[in-house]
Amino acid sequence: MVRKFRFIALVLAGLSVFAIAACSSGGDESSDAEATTAPGAEGTVAVVLKEFSIAPDADEVAAGEVTFDVSNAGALPHEFIVIKTDTSSADLPVTAVGADLTGLEEVGRIDQFNAGEEKSLTVDMEAGHYVLICNIAGHFAGGMHTDFTVN
Image 1 (cartoon, rainbow, N blue to C red):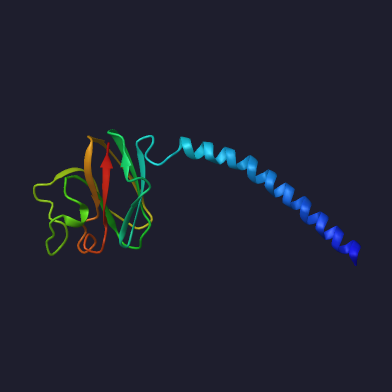
Image 2: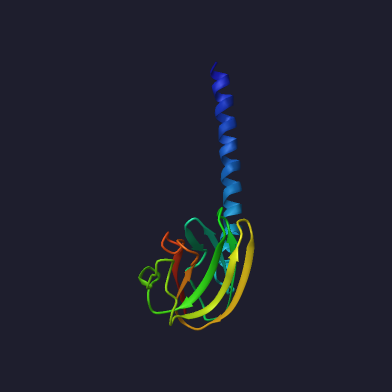
């Protein structure tokens, strides 16, 4: 019985050493990859739309050409609008249908597209505050808006 426990202890010790070695060698490589592929680092921002949220993988980027790779992961059609404004997304004026865009500077848009589809939008962005919204009736009020900063 004692020999059986010693054997199990040796096997577990060997597995522990193997696991530690595997983790330490992979850890360095993944941290290097993360450093070179940080969201927004190359001017590309992945954005996921669904009921009822807009989730960019970065909330700020450097000024210049920015590409938004937008995927509709929801069940409903959505649109994607980029607006330059000093007003926070939660404080935009609202009508009975959605955000009132009158007088606001629309920088770019992807018109309504279906669930499961992906679209890209490339815009030249100056430093400042922006909002990203879906303004299909009821979607903005449902929470499909977020703030975005360009430095």
